[in-house]
Length: 495
Image 1 (cartoon, helix red, strand yellow):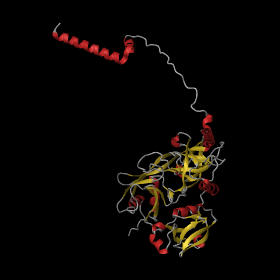
Image 2 (image 1 turned 90 degrees about the vertical axis):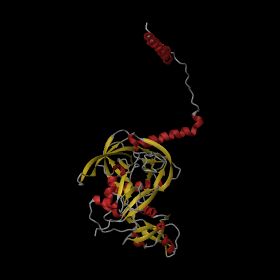
Image 3 (image 1 turned 90 degrees about the horizontal axis):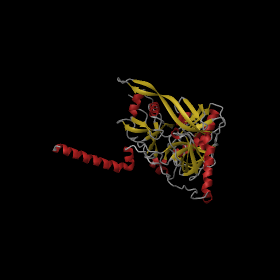
Image 4 (image 1 turned 60 degrees about the vertical axis):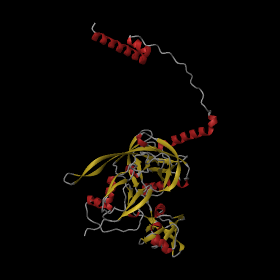
């Protein structure tokens, strides 16, 4: 054998021995059996003993055991009244072709939310933003029965809509409780249909009362019970299973971050819901009180404070409407409203919330500061017409200008995107030399225009294009977690 062949043979032997050693180390005796076709060994049963006794007897945690049973009993009583709402519709999308010409393209839309049955006849309360702009509504009951639904009426300012289930099902309604009896720290349960998974129940407490996301919406109930996408329109219930609120919104510190629930949710108080529900069922529309004044927060006019010698809270009357309840009561410009029907006034938002909640025909006492002393007048509240439903502040209408919608939006100068946390749009860019420059900042979240909620970019642009040429436009803005009102002047007339 030549020297080359011998070395090749030795190398092959070394390789074979090394391979066999590695194979045996990794596979052991099972590998040898597999290599030579042997049968695997029979499984040898392991000995084991499972515990047969719980760490604690129920008698040792009697309170928790009873609480557990009561939670389950409450859930089983409430969940059958909660429904899932599926919506479909068509929205018009404005586009430009290569020549700069505008055209409209219809785009199908779908949505999903929750609702709660509140009458034996099958009336359902949900959020207005759940059904807004949708042509077809479908309700799925707890029993998985599916029915079409009809919109009976809506209250955009309150964010409430009332539907009627078109069917003869066995409807199980929930009672509307008294939200005026709600206390901080009280246990509550939020029920809804998040993510389309079916009914879910989350538990929490009442964190605060009279919270506002805009200065036209009555104070909301704040809770740390988890409210997730799809929970909108579902009920917030107390320990008796009564509705004390309709889940409406959640708070996120930064709309640019797709974070989840932050432990801050908001519900519309049941007393406000009851009033809107009864008005819609009886008259087909919401009914709100009307006083007829234009107001300004005192904190915005420190010179006026010094001039009248008043340092306390309140809201300044800027003007009084002709033949309005305020004029009939004797209110006049530069009066400071200190109390309304016994409730202290710290801002115009609080005042208009109380006015809107007042019953039409009710006579209320209004305490004012005038001529260096406190006085009391009595006003009889009238019904607000639709154009009067939103709070009135300083600023009047300007002559309208005739512009295309695109030119109007360009002059207003706001480039926005959809908010990641529900209703509203977020400002991404402000065009220089526009009427928004210096008033709105990038990152502002605009949730309403002239008291009407904003639910999408298209909706925002439509409302803005209709308002800006004709009048001063009031934007309801969330900035740094604080509610603000920003008023844009009407577009100037072209000379």
